[in-house]
Length: 151
Ligand code: HEC
Ligand code: HEC
Image (cartoon, rainbow, N blue to C red; front, side, top):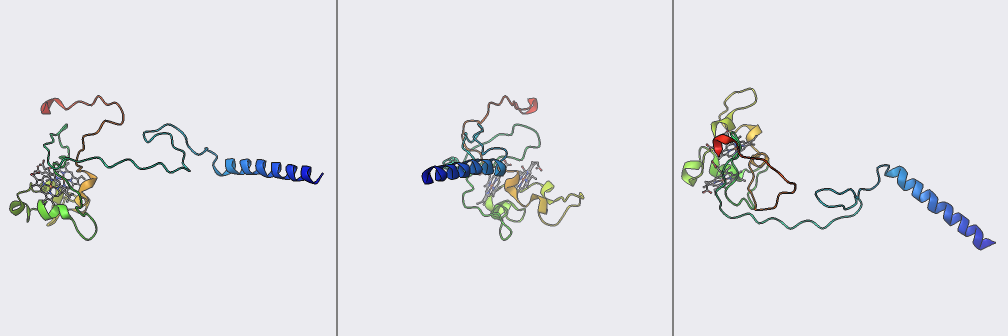
């Protein structure tokens, strides 16, 4: 008799637990197939390995006004509130001595179209627009073609 009562209680608790989980996660906990696989939100999937970036490479543009891709390794280059390693070579002041391309004049223009005396804050975080490129398989099929004028 006592045993039966316990079973009933634990069954009730189990059902309550399921109902509770559904209430807390009304959309379920993932398992939907995506570019990172089908792992569920509550599981931690091991991170992918870093891609290998070539030390130096020539990268051509695919469309006009594209931020040029970074043709060199940028490992360890800090870009933060305190320091901008990129500007140590690419600023107008340092570029000639470092043999690097100067950032273009557009990088000195703010959003009111005023030309500033230093790099505009909206061009400070270089990696927002410029990225190095690794040789990697595309995540999804892509039939993008270079614009005619650059073919
Ligand atoms: C030690 C100096 C140095 C540093 C630091 C550096 N670069 Fe460069 N960068 C160069 C040189 C030199 C070139 C010219 C191409 C080459 O020799 O690789 C270049 C080329 C580039 C180009 C291609 C320009 C073009 O017209 O095609 C981009 C974009 C670029 N760098 C972005 C960056 C960014 C972003 C950072 C910071 C994350 C950075 N660089 C840090 C030296 C540097
Ligand atoms: C908001 C996007 C954006 C940010 C942020 C940005 N750039 Fe650019 N960059 C561009 C675009 C677009 C071009 C090509 C058109 C042009 O010259 O303005 C370019 C061009 C360049 C070039 C080639 C200039 C030339 O004459 O060929 C260099 C070098 C460069 N950027 C470096 C940098 C560095 C270093 C930083 C960070 C201090 C930076 N960029 C931040 C968008 C950006």
